Image 1 (cartoon, each protein chain N blue to C red):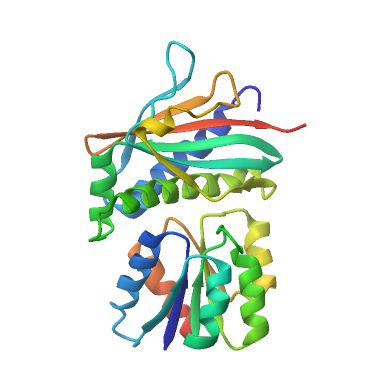
Image 2 (image 1 turned 60 degrees about the vertical axis):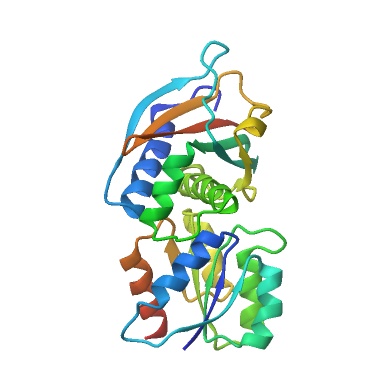
Amino acid sequence: MKLMIVDDSGIIRNRITRLAGTLSSLRIDVVGQAKNGREAIDLFATSQPDIVTMDLTMPEMDGVECTRRLVDMCPDVRILVVSALSDKPTALKALKNGASGFLYKPFNDRQLIDAIEELVS
Amino acid sequence: MNKISENEINVFTDAIGHYFRQISTEPAIIKAAFLASDEAPPPLYDYTGAISLSGDYQGTIYFSARRILIRHLLISMQEPSQTEQDFLDAVGEIANTLAGNARQYFGEYMHMSVPVCTTGKLAESIRLTRTHPFVIMIKWRQYHASLVIDMEQVH
């Protein structure tokens, strides 16, 4: 299972990478990291991930627009939005644009692992 | 938001409590909450992350912390890298998370910028929107931080 991480925070990208490596039930390879939506679009074609974690508030291109474009490029990709934006309309907008799940920041280790497992199940 | 209501203050204190509970096993303590003034300006520490607001609200939300608090927080997250960029990244991410969580109350039209992060000296040049922004003083372990809520509703 190939994972791409999209978040403007390097600390969050590192944390998701570390936690993805602890999943014993799944073999997850982090194939790319992007710090904004535009980078993610470029990286997507070459890394061809099966799953993506997607921040929403990012420079250059936000996560909702990036989600929409990635799903246009590859309808089978599963995208987990990982964002602090905790109002319901924003979550619904992300889901309408093709996201498969939503995890609110701040998350603990267990919550992220559960969310990734649910995404791939 | 000319006067900050108790509910609005609770939105932020709850977000702070939730953040530290999720990241570490030790809760944060709210040491004080007050309206800043010339005599009691908003306390800004070594690193400050700022989120600018637009849409239904204008102003800025700042999270500011001492270096040692951020260092221990990074350790709690098992983050081995502790460069200057990581410290700035951390305060920006915390400011973004606390402001983002507040949208559950303030709504989707409280538009948020990406974080702008500065070190101590630069933070002193911050221009405030309100005459008396609201300040929440935070203590986590024995380390200090502040959340400054300098926002008002646009009519």
